[in-house]
Each structure stands twice: as structure tokens, then as C-alpha cells.
Image (tube, rainbow, N blue to C red):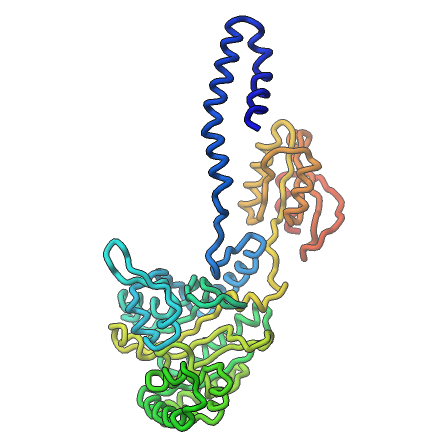
Amino acid sequence: MFEKRRTAQKSCNAPQLLDSSLGRRARRGSRKTTHIMEKPQQAKLQATASQPRLQAVRGMNDILPGESARWEFFEETVTRVARQYGYRNMRAPIVEHTPLFVRSIGEVTDIVEKEMYSFEDKLNGEQLTLRPELTAGLVRAAINASLTYNGPVRIYSLGQMFRHERPQKGRERQFSQFDIECFGFDGPDVDAEIMILASRIFRELGIPDIRLEINSLGNTDERAAYRAKLIAHYDANLNALDDEAKRRLYTNPMRILDSKVASVIEVNKSAPILLDSLQDESRAHFEGLQTLLSDARVGFVVNPRIVRGMDYYNRTAFEFITDRFENPMTICGGGRYDGLFEQLGGKPTPAIGFGMGVERTLLLLDDKAPVATQDAYIVHAGTGAAAFASQIAETLREAGLAVTQHAGGGSFKSQMKKADSSGARFAVVIGENEVAASTVAVKPLRNATGEPIQGEQAIITSSALAAHLRG
């Protein structure tokens, strides 16, 4: 291969060197120089061929341009709805100190025991963790900034989380979550508000088949009384419990209610119900929530088995669930965490929030998400056409239109193929005649719904182009 390349290079140089002795020496020099230059090239090629192609980490997926329109549709919808309800954006770091999650989520939970990406900072020995959920970091940030000093706040956040678990449908090791959090509110009115907000998000995304299930986890004393009843129930059915349930029996018995083991599910059917342990204040809060949801015409069912996965929850707990897949899937879940601020070193602050899984929600969108399209693709060729096309493109962008200007040259025919494949609604064609007349040729490619059409080409003045593309 390399010998053929040297021969080809020598024949290309030969007509310039003629037959002089200088030419012969130059040819010998040329061959030697070419040979010396090719050695590193050869080594580079061999090194490239021997290197394996790097892949994404398992369970951490790329979002390519063809998929990103659905993500953008989701992000634009949830942030718009959150702002309509008076919520403001807040962002916290992806990496936090490990004790933050151990203290907040609970040491005897699947997340802390099995799923956290934790590591030691080699520079200073600190124990750090990639956040497995958003609430703890947002509460930590609120405490550090005394965010509730002047009164309650409503916030929303959107970002990536990390949990080391087996990747499956709607459950990845890196996943995205939209969060709503309310700090400083203690009444059932804000509990109802965030569920109404979530219901609106699902409606505006075009996802109707979601059901809301609610429960009350009571306060600390009520849960302690319930915990004793639960332990007694499981002790009486010890032979039906698997090893995992037995391990949790005296540390976190409420988590056994989430078991997927058939024998444990059977035992859970006759387990005591936490709602029966509620006292007057918690019961009034839960009944007030139900009344507010009914008044807002938000459908719900009371599910006394909802316990949620973090230890910080109290009183209200809820989940939005879909049955569209083989097994029920929780798309959005949350509840009250009135003790979390104090648990993390802050002042007692009532709070409630929810997390909505982005990937899981996108599974329900099907093809309902609108495809992001360009308004125009500018095709240009000839003297002065590129400069005129740039002026036109910037004018249209200033008018709020999305425009792609062709780059890389090529014939009008090849550029029109690019315009058609771009998904743009119009092709704006500029040649030398258009430059001279300050006009453009406009050819419709798609209608307002994105379907291809065969439209008639029109000559439009550059000053009237933006209005024509809109109309």
C-alpha cells in the first residue's frame, strides 16, 4: 500500500522536475522525504486500528438530535406550567457529600445500601456521591442560603440523577427528573396544589391514562405505633418472609410493604393499615387534601400501601401510575417531608414536593410530541449569493424565525435535497438574479403539520420575506 503511494507521488512531481541532474536529486530527495513522513503516518494508522471503539457507560444513554425534540417538548412544558403556578427555578450540584443522602434518605434503604455512586475525593479524602435524587440537595441548598428566611418558597428543578441498578425500561443508571418543591407550607392546600400541577402537566403533554393514588404516612408518633403493629404482624408470619424482608423486619419494616416476592405480597394483604393509626390532626389533614382534590375535579384513589422509598416522608404520600406496560409503573411520586430541614441541620420547616421521571414520562408520549422544525432552509449559489443569504438569514432570525443557511457549496439540486431532508417548511432560493433584484425564490416544502407538500414557487422581495414565511 505504502509503495504504491510513493510511486504515485513521484509521478505527480515528475513533470515539474524534467530530466536534469537537479531533478534527479530532487526526485531522490522527494522519495526519501516521503518515506520519512510516512513512518509516523503508518504508526498512527496502526494505532488507530488497534484502539477499541469507546462505548457509553451501561445505563447512561446518549440523547441524539433525532430524539431531543421530545426532551425539549417535555422540558418546555413542565417549566412553563411550573411558572404558571408561581414556581421559580433552583439548581443544586450533581455531587454532594455522602452523609447528606445517608441522613436524609435513610441508611436502611435500597438507594443508600445498594444504588449510590459514592467515591473518595483523591485530592482531600472527602466522601462524595453522585446525587440519587434531588430533594436532599435542594433542602441542603435552602438551609445554606436561608432561603425561607422571608417566608415560604415554591421552586422547581430539572436535572440528572444516578443510581447503580440493573438498567431496564424506564429505569437507567443516569436518569433525569423534574422536581417541584414547596418549603414552609404546612396545610393540605399546597399538597393539593402540587398534585393539580402534576395533573396539568400530564394533560398538556397529552398523556391521559395516568391515575393518582394517595395515602397518609402520619407523623413520627403515629408511624411508631404502626411500626409496632406491623412488626407483630410479620413476626406471626415469619415463615412466609424472604431473607430481605427478615433483614428489614426490625430496621425498616414499612419497606416490606413494597416487596415483590409472592409469599410476602400475600402476607401484606392482611397487614395492618397505617390510616387506622392516624390521630385527629393527621386525619384532618388527609381529609382536607381529599376534599381539595375533589373540588378541583382531580380523580384519585386512596391506597394505604403507598410508603415511598425515602425515610424522610411523613403525612401525605402520593404516586401517579400508568398501567400501559406489563407492570404498573410510577411516573411521578412525592409527599411531605416536614422533618427533613431539621434533620439536615436547619430550622423546623414543613415541606412537600414530588419528582417526575423524564425517561418514564417520555415512554408515554408515543408520537404526540411535536417535532421541532426549521421555518426555512436557505439555498444559494453564484456571485454574491452567500453574502446576501447571510443577510437574509440574520434578518429572519431577528424576526423570530428558525433558519438554516446551507454551508459547504454544491449545486442547486444537491442543496434542494438538503433543504427537503432538513424538515424545513420552506426553501429560500438565492442566485445571482435574486441578488441583483434583492428578491428571493420561496418554495413550500411542508404544511403547518409537517407533512410534505408540492407548492408553487414564488418570488418575494427580501423585505416581505418574514411575513410571507409566517403567513
